[in-house]
Image 1 (tube, rainbow, N blue to C red):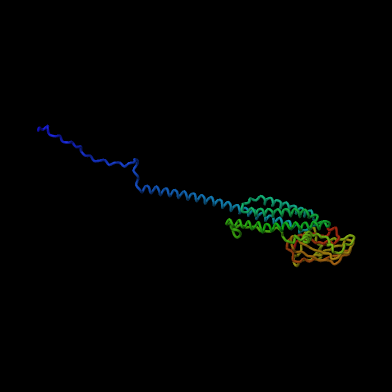
Image 2: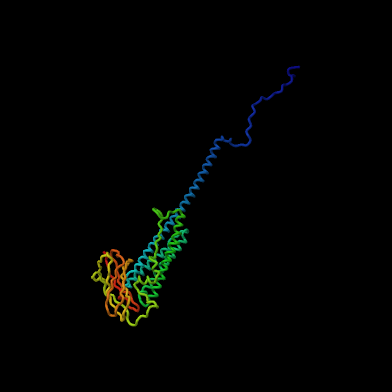
Length: 369
């Protein structure tokens, strides 16, 4: 067989390294595990910061609301305390005028009208107080109390002139005593209802009441004495005489009455137009010189001396006076009078049937030393 006749060898292609197949699903290769954890931590921290900020904002807003509420309560209490103090001062002027000398009815009326205007102004201010919801009830009671005081002063002022006239004194004095009940009621309403509600609201808000640095609540009362509810005490304060009770003996016909001519102390006649200097101790004795200017013999004639703005006074009586005759009575004060300058009034109290009482009293400026 020739060379060309030999069978042809099968040609085999050379092997090549097989390529590593790429994982299915294209894109970037995942990062290392540590990077994923860092991202997660950062997200958690960010969420925590957001929560904390929200909580802080909520706390801040709540704190602002609490501070605003507490400030409003404190302002309300301070306004009420200030107005009640003003009202009590107005009451003091009112009662001092009533217990002072009544020899000048015009001046007395002017003083009472002034206190009535002051009370009306205080009532208007009370109605205008900014009131938090926690003390709405207290505010209603406070305004009602101030209304009672304003009405009472106004109504008493309207009855003063009739009370100083013998013909109309009884009805006017009774009306004044009834009006005094308004002042008593105003104190009950304010001290027993309004003040406790204010204190409760303050303490409920965590505000200290009383003591050093705490809220001060004004609990002063308007009515100086419950005696003002008694018509007899009102008549005494106004230096007027009420009609004789029906069960006494009938008044004799003709003129009745006395006239106070002068007052002396230790032999020295007191002057109405200039200040009199008198020792305060021991308790002085005043001599009231007066005359029976009527047409009848009078019995149990009472004499008294009062000091304006003081409870110190004195009283005496003369068993009998004769028509057209002069007499005197000695009145010793019940205690040592307060030192300083005062208006002292000496009075011969009206007797049954006496119609003219303008000459029964004399008032003197006296300095007790």
